[in-house]
Image (cartoon, rainbow, N blue to C red):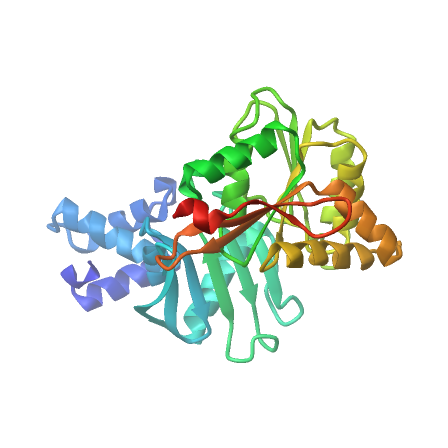
Length: 365
């Protein structure tokens, strides 16, 4: 929309804004820029002033064209793979956009995203994983770790909770409701971006009202229904490590908060052992997620993460604990249309092969 204004006028407005000119009391950058535009072009129509001020605000203090992409309600992820074209995930499919960014623009975006959070993104801190106040998740990887230039992934927070029916047919939904209703310990597995967190929200929405639920997450993404939800989020600490609190610390803290159900957003490491111990000692009906491609892989991954804990328990003991703790494995994947769907529901016996509780593919047919 800035094409409505001569280039020299836009340049002067940009320079005055950066220099701190204008009425700071106006508050939002758009209002300050609008005042500067009216000062430069007094006869400019109000509608044109508003559109131009918005475009300039996005350019000068926002994320430029990346922010415009995030405004599209069908876009869930914006992916910058270094200088060059920007990709998005739209309606479950990855696609290249017409937006092209250079190194300087990416550096500005990273600073504007993580700087206000008190985080550093530089050669000494090349990996940053953060959550914005509105729940948007930001992941940054900088050179030298990112060989082709800074990598930025912005995952927009989903404002609404999807029902179980959005992930499966009626038969599968009944099976899942029976599992949560029977206080089964459920682990949802699937690849990155398959919707594990969203399904966790949907499963918790089926629980009786009034239950005390304590959630533990690396980056808080869960938006659970209910009147008695306590949310805990890990923190990386300062540059020298002070004040850090990991998932493992929070799982232990959560157990002291008298939860009816414990919900761990995702297990990735040694905290799996604390989760398994918690589920084995009476916290029935709890839920968690992990990355895996199949039910057998999910079970093996939980065992591997437990074995990696400092306690160094033998595999046989870990395997017995995991099978005692986990009752049901629910798999997620994408169908040919890009929709996230439940692809498997398996029971976990104390010994022997997994039990297929539902042949999802046939049920859906």
